[in-house]
Image (cartoon, rainbow, N blue to C red; front, side, top):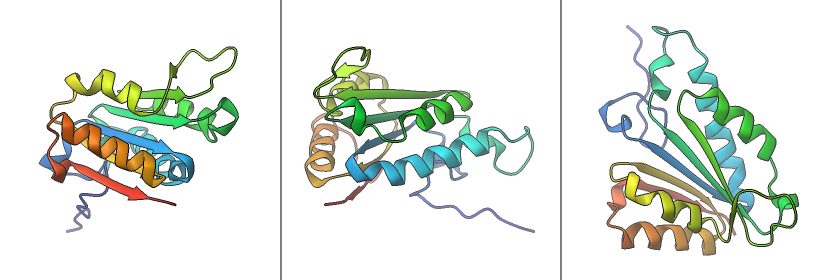
Length: 157
């Protein structure tokens, strides 16, 4: 019998500990890792119920992506598409200097995350980006009582 690999670093891995909401945070080059996870989750959510992996994306997934300007939000259109493909996928953007036409949060990626934290008492967090961003997000999560074993991060810089 084949068994699916269980990996705590994979926000879509099967198992009881992965029934919690998955929160993905990205900034700078960290978008590569987060975008790959989002694409993977969207692909799994498209599977027919009852097939291997189809149950993996039944939980809510929120993606928080921050940059200085709209031009720096690389992969934004793909993230919009992939989060929309999930049953409960959500994309939250934050720009420090938004310019005209931006309807997302103005500020750092911690701003939309802070707004959502009260609704995420049991979430797992996956954060990738420059050290200043991952450190700020990790400090924010710690300050709100998130258990460190629920925070997975990669700093690129």
